[in-house]
Each structure stands twice: as C-alpha cells, then as structure tokens.
Amino acid sequence: MSFSAIELHPTLLKGVDELGFTTPTPIQSHAIPPGLEGRDLLASAATGSGKTAAFLLPILHRLVDLPRGTTRALVLAPTRELALQLLEDLRALARYTGIKAAAVYGGVGMGPQVTAFRRGVDVIIATPGRLLDHFQQGHSPLSGLQYLVLDEADRMLDMGFLPDIRRVLRHVPKPKQTFFFSATMPRPIEVLTREILRNPVKISLQRRAAPAAGVSQALYPVPGKRKGALLVECLKDGRIDDALVFTRTKHRADRVCKLLVRNGIAAERIHGNRSQPQRTKALAGFKAGKYRVLVATDIAARGIDVEALGHVVNFDVPNVPEDYIHRVGRTGRAELTGNAITLVAPEEESNVGQIERAVGSKIPRERLEGFSYATSSAEGPLEVPRAKHIAAIRARRAPRRKRAA
Image 1 (cartoon, one colour):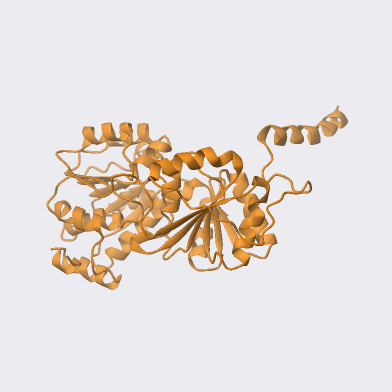
Image 2 (cartoon, rainbow, N blue to C red):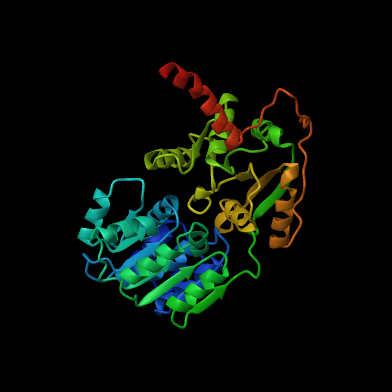
C-alpha cells in the first residue's frame, strides 16, 4: 500500500510527498486507516518505527477543513525534546494545510505559550507539568478539545508523570478520539488504557521489546577507568563517525564532553542542568554537523530524532532494559540501518544479562585491536562519588570559616 492509496486530504498528501514518503511503515499502515475512521488506538511499536505520522496524519486530516481559532487536539509528551521534535514533524506534514501548532514545556518563559492558548492554535503539544502550570493560572481551558494523544506513555510513567497525566485528564473534556502510543506496556499503563480508551483498535507489531531490525549491536568489555580512552580511540580510528553518547548522570555527561573536546573531537552535551536554549542549541548543532558527538543523559532518549544517525554509544550500561531499547532506538530509525555500541565495565555485566534476556538474544562482544585495556595508577575515576565530592567542598570551605570566626 502507498500513501496515495490512503484517503488523506490532498494538502496532507502533498506534504507527505514533499517529505519523500511513498510507502507507509508497518505501524502507519496499521494505524492510519482506523484512525481516519475515528477509532481509539492502542499501539505498541518499536521506537523509530514512524509512529509520529501514524497518529498525526489522522488528526490533521480531521482538522484541515474545520474553522481555525480553537485548540482541538492535545498531544502529551514526556520531554521538552520530544515535544519540539513532534512540533517539527507536525509542521512538516501540515505545511500546506494552514493548521497551526505550538509546543508547551518548562524551562522557558510562559508568555508565547499563553499567546498560543489565547489564539487557539489547532494543536498543542505539551509536557504534563508545564501544561498543569497553565491550567492552574487559567491560561488553557481547552474547552474545544476533540483529539488526545499520549505519546511515549511508558516513559511518562518512568519519569513519574502518571499522577500529572490523571490531573490533566480531569481538566479537559473527554475527547472524541484518543491515540495511546507506548513502546512497552507495564501494568500501570495497561490500567490507564482501560480507563480512557473506548473499544480501541489494538496494534502490537512486536512480541518482545527490542531494537529495530536495522540496528547492529556490539558490547565492548573495558575497565571503567578506560572507557573514556576507548571512546576517544573509536572516534579517532574512524570506527565511529557521529554518535549520540549516553551517560548515567549529568556530571558524567559534562566530564565525557570535556574529555572529547580536549582530544580534538567536536562535542556538546544535553541534560537536565542545561537551560532550554543551551539544549536547543546543542541539538541543532549536532543535527547540522557542527558537533560529531552529542553526550546526553536519558532525558534525550525519547526526544532526539536525527536523520540517518550512524551510532549510539552507551558509555554507561543502563540499569533497566527498556532504557537500553529506547537509547538504541535513536539510530536505525524508519527502516534505516545504524550501530549501537555499549561500553561494559565488569561491574555492569549483570545489567547486560538483563538486557540480553529482555531482547531475547546475546549481543556480540568485540575488542578494539591495538588498544591498551590496562589501567594505570595515574588514571582517576571519571566521576567523583557524591559523598567524596561533598567532603571535598566542606574541606575547602573550612579555612574560610575559621578566618571569618
């Protein structure tokens, strides 16, 4: 089936054609027809499968011929990055329709967002926390709401947003149609679907959560103190061209980024301590090729969509298999190919075992020939333990307290 065979509004087909899309992905071919019929959807599909267009196209089709000036669709997303990516995708699909959309998220001023609510843009894409802030201040009644999307619902659960989602649902009218997308279906998410969906069409394109078929995976066992050196060597020897590198903490992201820059590798970082303008600038620079490497915490795992991203590197093995799947899902998107490399310290082997059981296969182990895996006494840890870091700060402040006394 081609997009031209789907009865979408001609202005939408023009946008789809201009984007170079000819054949729907499996999730799109399963979701768009019932979505056009007005059915609620409950979909579980691999990240990077094209699900954004699967829920946006039916909604945009319904909105094209309606009068402007009323917000009729709300999309809830877990992170700022994902909200902005969804806005970018919507604008590309709807470029010939006249449909307007806005993203509502924290870390920036509320003024432009208030204006969007007052003007009644057709679609609001929001993170739950910031949307509730607007509700509390009376900016966003959304009384004309007809369509609701919960995207990456399991990630919102992981981030503790489930109570916020329930509060949002109490503030808005019951929609005519709801789209519920989640890569995995933990029990609290299943309970929520039963509460808000009406006789939904259920779409599950994979029996087990796993990275996309086009992703080549490899593990590199390495002492923890040599991870930075191994990453630098892989970048310098051409094994890795561009990469999204995931770390366990914000502090490690900063340290890894500085290490790469010291070694002549263009890199930036993105995490929760960076301001929204800094995060936006870093992501834009990575997409434009200004930086070879973007170092990130898991805040970016669901919101970064970089066309033809070559590599994802797990500098730290994630604690839960679902995070591994979503990190790796940043490459090999939309049926393209990609590579996922995980640097594994001995103490992380148990987490690797959990990941392999979750994806249902052993991940090949590789070794970089010519690289020295031996650690030296001169090499310090990449990250100072929190207790030790606090003790050092107190020790530095003690002489000043004595002088003040």
